[in-house]
Length: 98
Image (cartoon, rainbow, N blue to C red; front, side, top):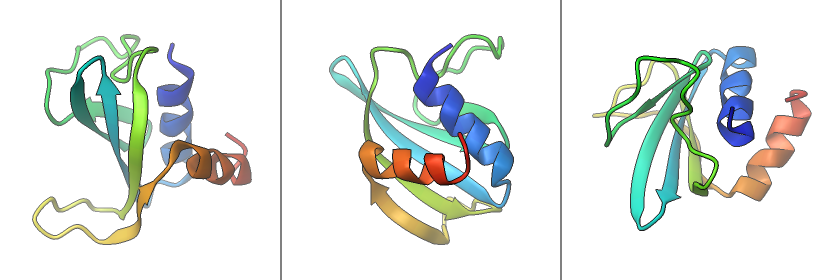
């Protein structure tokens, strides 16, 4: 499984009050992935029914991550932090032991 996606899913299990909105580049295309309570779902592409198929593939590059307070309302999101780089998110992941 993809270590980036898996780590972000583990983070949301430890922080169930947060939703992560991850912008990634997969090849020449961008995708937005919502991660909440350990589950990932693409907001722009179809998501496989099999949870073992990573939504964020190995070759994906993380563009930015938004931390949003749960419950997520796309019309009025309550941002905790916006446009976090992967490097900055790695520090946050380390803080919670992921």
